[in-house]
Image (tube, rainbow, N blue to C red):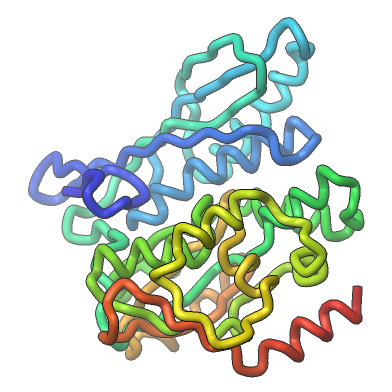
Amino acid sequence: MVGTSTADDAAAYRIDGQRALIQTVDFITPIVDDPYDFGRIAAANSISDVYAMGGRPLFALNIVCFPTKKLPLDVLGKILKGGCDKAREAGIEIIGGHSVDDEEPKYGLVVTGMARADRVLTNAGARPGDILVLTKPLGSGILTTALKKGLLANVTKNKIIDVMATLNRAAAEALDGLEVHALTDVTGFGLLGHLVEMLTGSRVAARIRTADVPVLEEVWPLARDGVYPGGAQRNLDRLDRSVHWPDATPEEIKIVLADPQTSGGLLIAIAPHELDRLMDRLSGAEVPAAAVIGEITSQQPHVVQVDNSSMKGLVDDATEDC
């Protein structure tokens, strides 16, 4: 049902008239120092792709790369414990896996899920008039880069770890029975990159309001000072023809919207008459954000029109606060 043609989050394979199997794989290098937190975040990141297809996870397999000659095995044990605990929070077990000796630790999961065949959600069904909703704030790439440089306050460090380790389960469950036309999660290509993939697959365009995009504390001044991952600039370069910026858009706004995320939120394109029901459900769920950030349009397919009105004051205020 879903393969590689639309750069979607996972594969979907129809197994009978009612059910589709969802299959995905993802693994990452450490982005935080604590091995247990790394395991939790990596597992949440991997499981998210099943939620982003409208499915529920069934079970998972570990993928492990670990330098056994450089690091003690108890570090690996903590990584695996973090992944196991996060999988159980999602209601599944890790029932096997594979490991190799490698120079750098890497960890993630192969996740198998299930969805109703008529409710598989892809990134390729958005329609003009749909409302765009985001369920986690941006900034994990910038903040983890700052963390590696020792530039992050402890309160912000703990906040970003909590956000990255939060499952997208509650956000996905809030979509049950609603008229959702397209769905994806925001990860390595940043908000703009994954939105452009949605627009390309759907053959539509979008308008987003940067003032409405949720962003974590400390992100704006760090981006302004050049503290961000190289992937943010690569994402921007790749999107050069697909994003229309207002004149004199500050560079930090571009960087934040292209910041590569780890275990980011769901990006939802929902029919406008369903928006109130969705927001009511999200407000009662444990989601890090529930933000209406824009809408799908029919003009100039594959293009994002960025609206920066009211944004300069917000960036300046954030800079002064920090």
